[in-house]
Image 1 (cartoon, helix red, strand yellow):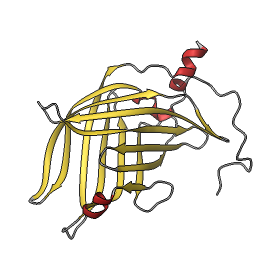
Image 2 (tube, helix red, strand yellow):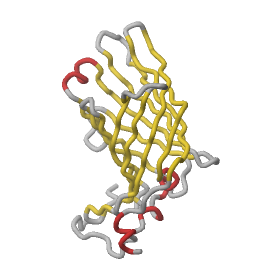
Image 3 (cartoon, rainbow, N blue to C red):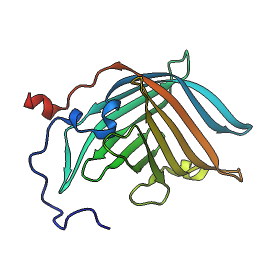
Length: 212
């Protein structure tokens, strides 16, 4: 069933410019966060390796985004991860979390500087405190695209992230990336998880600042 109107050009009117008031299930994630107890399980020749990590995760509201009748409210994010007591970046990732109030659709776009991008899809009610997003290799609406080396050596088959908003104001994620590792018969479940605590408030989006 098509959930969009026949008119694909006309944008919605009287759009509320205050993104922080319209993020639905993403509301509690806005701001600057730190997680000190991250755990990464990644593939190595000798088998799975566990790696602790520390993370700084910033999510800032963007102006409302219209595509014809479609309207998103969202957060632009950047996460940087290091190993304990090290300076060198262990993982870096940027993208957007988007929510469409009219449908409950959730999107996460992500890009990492090792030649990979993805778009994950999910759905959640406005007041949801847990939700999942999913991407799969070969899909055209929630797919994964990798550079030639990753396709050759560490082919990403699926990506799934579950986010939980905790009663104490923190939030947690549990992430699984299903990999086809060259030379291994079975697909590898590369997992990451962390709990993040707020260390800074979000900055209102430009349009909201102008309205004030």
